[in-house]
Length: 506
Ligand code: SF4
Ligand code: SF4
Image 1 (tube, rainbow, N blue to C red):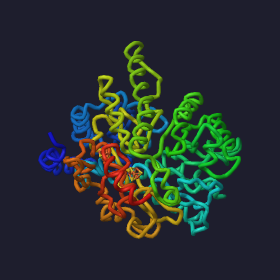
Image 2: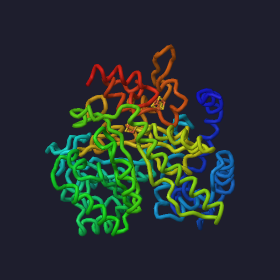
Image 3: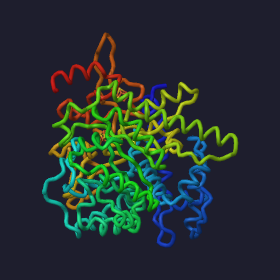
Image 4: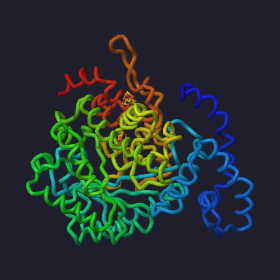
């Protein structure tokens, strides 16, 4: 059955009912705090004490609601308990869940789904940078205006109150975030108010001392950019001699501090032969690996010839996906044999939206369908809701803040009048999130375009994977001069279009 018809018939019928039920227990109790969150904790077996009123609402409404919902979605309660209650990041998951519930209350269940606020914000904290990388969406290295330390604190305060729930996860990026003298001060402040703090860095400033400080201020996850296992490939791309060793040392220093460390590689024409080697390195270091898409924004436009062809992108995604699928089956085998497995299935990942489509096809060849939501590493958390949460999350599950506080749907959109949706300090966040037209255009897949090639109608608009993928809208914006609904020419299904478009651009 077509997803649209499910949406149109079933969802429009049940949405008013769901919205009403949730509104009954979306209560902020003076004594107990958020009943949305506490009732979920209690449903999952957490130790929660309720006042009389909350207890009544929990027993009569919230608990039966969760019970029915978890049966319908066939959720794995053990996995949920593990993620929401027992792990260090439980608070972030709970907040994400509360944003989802409030999203249903506000907008109903939609495909794709829009929560009441983003799960993750990437904060391009500074324009400063000590490297000159070819792919830099920020075109960093400039001295454009930035927020003061006091204003940065204010941003954190605002983010910690989004939708009366608060932001689950904040990632400091840049430029190079550690270039700002107040980075540790602001990160420490943020980690007191936002449950999951991460940093995306080139790693060169992560001396032993700085890695320790990172740990001390509460940064949970460090994503360190590496573009090659050979110094030459890395430095040719990062364009500063000597940076390779510093990055490698920075990575090791984070690992030594027990920070969850991820090697981040932007796949492009010059490092295709390095990807397997980088993933082997991640294995050796027991680190994660994430593959970023080369999107022609900022300085990357000057090096447009580095963008991968659809065939090359597919081959990279298959390399990464194969590792994930193999890990999944190994972990399954272990679980069948001994009841548990410590194999990290989600250690190899890509933010490229076609990744879910590739993983789906690879796993099918092995007799099972695994779905990952692009930008979300947890296969288990998304497998039954991938059509709702999957694919490009720009302006829906995630968004970006610029060094001066301007907001845009994704870091890979250029900074221009039509992509800026407001300023975090000057505008009311709820207002922007609820009403901005650009955001709502990104929150539907119905307007995605299709086209004719070889007597067939193809493209993102008619693709069966558009709800788990949807194509990169920032790529469409670049290649089709601001048209965010055009097909993603980075995808193997759109090879014809890629050839046509690149002929006129490159
Ligand atoms: S055609 Fe578009 S929606 Fe389909 S897999 Fe390719 S990029 Fe994704
Ligand atoms: S536009 Fe979407 S798919 Fe592209 S990088 Fe941003 S979030 Fe990812």
